[in-house]
Image 1 (tube, rainbow, N blue to C red):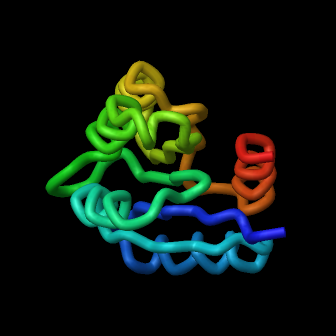
Image 2 (image 1 turned 180 degrees about the vertical axis):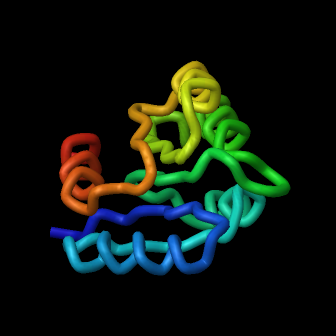
Length: 121
């Protein structure tokens, strides 16, 4: 069986590295992106099984990224997990944009990995 591929979009390098480590240790293949603009470039090259994205980022926000994914016929079926440390405003925006779920930071590694498995399997 092929590993589940995840596009991980997070603008804080330390957080990105930590989340990548959690996900890879759980057996997933992870491609990191430093922001939404980089994620858009990567989506043009490869279609991941799932996207995990921060919401508040420079250049292209997580909400804009989700909107792009949902509007693109080839990408629209990809499950998206949004993550944020902020309160209800960004959470509501992410849900309205089409996120499958929104997780609060700091993330629990077990919750993240079980959510990925639920959405992909």
